Length: 478
Image (cartoon, rainbow, N blue to C red; front, side, top):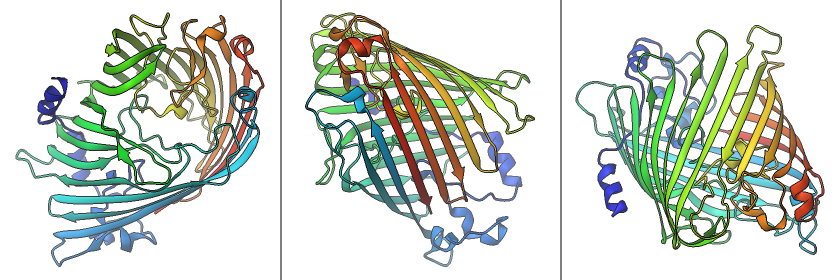
């Protein structure tokens, strides 16, 4: 029944760009496109008239290849190569006895290449991916988050017929394999840090109208198979509506969403069975007057059923930022607070919040010990800009379990320590240092170091080595 409702809503669904901003842009010189996290969101049609752009690039000839005299059909080619070296000490607090060496160093490599064919208002997009790793000797060896030898990451047909009423209205329909990214990526993300990234099979319908973008979706998550072609999970469904726009009369952004997720046999929060979970939430963000302070607030509630029991869970995430642009190095200070519910005990009502398909690495530290389930977290830090194109950030996090009876879940939604193995809520503290340098529009260099100080729950529940993690990454996009 819910699937039928979602399909009806797909016909009403949509995506957004502000009408006022579009009319302003019409009077301005065309801007050079920027590379995006979702590569298919890049629009290189401005290169139909390259002389109108303020600058030129070596790759311009392959970003817009005219296939007829009128520009009715054109092709864009692109790609990205990334290499990251990682060094670990005390992985997973030393792991389980006999599970493997918690100290290791290895390399991760990813190559993505794409072809984007446009014919009038129809489009075909294909992106291939190869994700490889050197020998990984950590407990468990290489994982599906690290290795996927060859896969179709995106492969879809898109139709964007012109709509009456002006350029501020746009309808986009996509069928096929496609990545998803919504809002601040707390719940839906391609998870770019992960070497293999995340993708889905299905359909999306998006409508841009009245300064709002509304997107309807009916998808199945794609399962990574390291040595074979990836396939979607048949006993699953991910559907819903995501709307984003501006609060009228303000500079504040607003997201509103309903997301349904159905999975076959699952164990989560100590309860097992088939799952049907509904997530209702919203997010707002923006500046606080002329104070130089900005904020973000997101909250979500979950209902549904897991096995014989019901679901009642929720989360809240907040951030305050203060960017002193007139100071040397333009520091931005931030203070964050997060809560995601846990389960009192197995059976009955399942209280563990499920972060769905998140960018887990983005919010709880570089080491990924903690995910958005059964957590209370506070963090603070500062980001500096010492040179053009560079950033240097230091952040400190502290984590507690929201419920003593529930587990510690990592960023991959895996149980790192069972809740029954300790009574303390106090999990630990993490210190992160990250430096980035956007050398040119194509080249991004990044390095980071993180140290995790385990607290009482880790000591109670097993090995309690401190964790050290360092990495160096080079990424080239064209």
